[in-house]
View 1: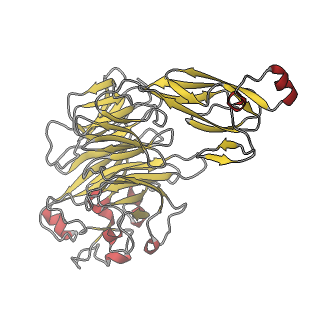
View 2: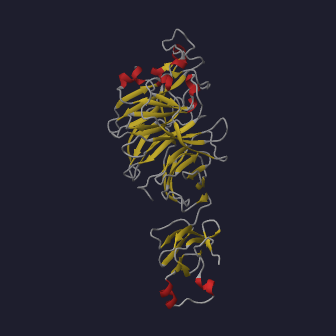
View 3: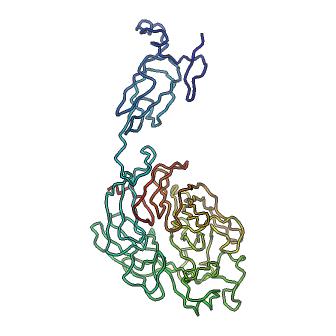
Length: 487
C-alpha cells in the first residue's frame, strides 16, 4: 500500500499518513480502536470572523505533517492562528501532529478606507498615524493609515518648511514672515513654538538684508535649536572670494541658539571653508581635488546665486557632528560640532566627511545622488553608531531612490581616502519620483515611510514590498511618526 502526505507545496509520496481516517476507512473510528492503536489525534477547527480553513475538523494520523491554510472572505483578512505552541500570523502553516489540536483561525474585517488610500496591508503596516506636512502650506495633519485625519493644525502664516510635534503635544516649526529681502524655494524666516493649546510660547527670527532662515531645524539634546541660514554676499564680495559667476551669492550657515534667551551660542559658516581654482589672488585658491575637506565654490552653476541650497540637517550626538543635505551639490556634508564658533572658522571646522557625489570636489568614485532631501539617522541601539537614511530625488533618471547607509565607525582623517559609505538597503520603484522636496523616515516596526513630495506617502517593508500608499490632495514636505501621539 502507498500513502500520500501534504507538504508546503505538493502532495509527496512518503510513509507518513496524512489522511482523514473517516475518508481512509469510510467509517467512524470508535474509541476502542483509538485506545488500541493510539495512531491518530483529533483536530478541531474553529473560525472567528469570516473565512474558511483547510483541512477540516477530523481525525488524523499522528506525526502527519499537515498544512493548515486560512482563506479570508471578501472584506476580511486573516489575522492569526490560536492553538499552536505560539500564535502564528501567516495564513499557511505546517504542523507535525503530535497531540490533539484545537485551532482557532481569526479573521478580522478590513477597516473602511478613504479614497486616498491606494494600498493597505493590515498585517504589515506600522499602525502609528503619520504627521503629514503641507509643503509651504498653512496646515499639518495627524492622519491614520485608513486615511482619516485624526487632528489638523492650521496656522495664520505659511510654513517654511519643517514642523514637528513636541513631547508636550505642542508644535515647533519654521514659518514665512510677511516680507523678506530675498527668497528661494524653502525659505522661512521665523521659527515658532506653540503649546498644545496653540498658544505661542516663543519665536526667533532670522530675516534681514543678508540672512534668512530656511528649510529645517533640529532640537539638540541640550534643548538648544539648530537652524539653517542663507548668508548673502554681494557681487563684489563674491568676486573677491573667487566666484566665477556674476551677481551676489548665498551660502550656507548653521546657527545654534538657546530658545529661552535667544542667545546664539554656536555658528558654522560655509564661507570659512571654501576652495576655488578660478581666481589665483584669492586667499582660498587651490587645487580642488586635493582638498575634499573644503567646499568648491564654483561647483554649482545656478544663476540666482543660491549655490548650495541645503535643505535638511540632523544631529548625531554620538559623534557630535551635523549631517547636512546639500541639494545643489547632490551630497551630504558632515560638519564637526565640538569646536566653538571661533575654532569652527579655522581648519578645525572643515568638513570631516562627505558623500553622495565625488564630482562636487573633483574626486573619483560613483556618484549616487542627483539632488537629495531629508537626512536622518536610524537608531540601532544605545551602544552602537546609527545608520543613515536619505531620499535621493533622482533628477537625472526621473526616478527617486531611498538609501540606507552604514556609516564608517571612524571618519578617515585623510580626505583623499574618503569614499561613499556602505549601502545597507535601498528602495525604488518606477512610479516613485519627485524632483523636489520629499523624504524618508524609519518607522518603529522597521518599515520605511517615504514622502513622495508631489504625490503623497508610501510605506515599504524591509523586503521592498509596498504595504501602504497614500495619494494626497496637495504637495508634502515630509512625514513623521510619533508613537506617543495616536490621535
